[in-house]
Every structure is written in C-alpha cells, then in structure tokens.
Length: 76
Image 1 (cartoon, rainbow, N blue to C red):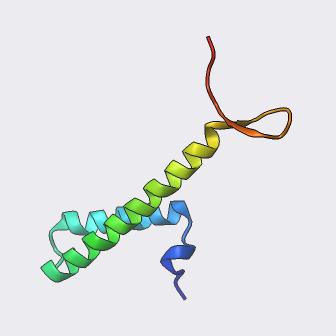
Image 2 (image 1 turned 135 degrees about the horizontal axis):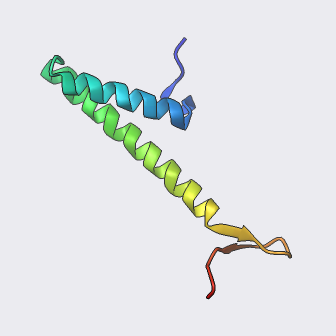
C-alpha cells in the first residue's frame, strides 16, 4: 500500500514532485490530468517550502547556557 502524502518524508515529496514535473514537461499528459498533476505538484511544493522554513527557523536559534532558545545573531 502506498504511503499517504502526509506520511511521506521530505525526500519522498521532492522525488514525487520531480516525477510530476517530468510528466508535465513531456507534453503527453491529457489536459484534465495535467491540471490535477499541477495542483498536486503545487501542494507538494508548498509542503516542502513550509518544512524548509520551519527547519531554517530551528537552525537559526541557539540554546543558551540556561537552556533558553534565542535567535542566532552574529556580533561583530
């Protein structure tokens, strides 16, 4: 049984997105199918973008000695 979209890893979503793009670029997809695939691709792209934004926010925070998270900034 195939994984549900919500259960897919980030990497799986990227691979699926790449497959959809290849199909659409081939020009062999009927219009109705192309619209559905485009809609699915846009949802996948948004999910991946949201995930990257969340990870980026986490990476940009550092843990202070007291255990408190704080935005990471570089002081000169």
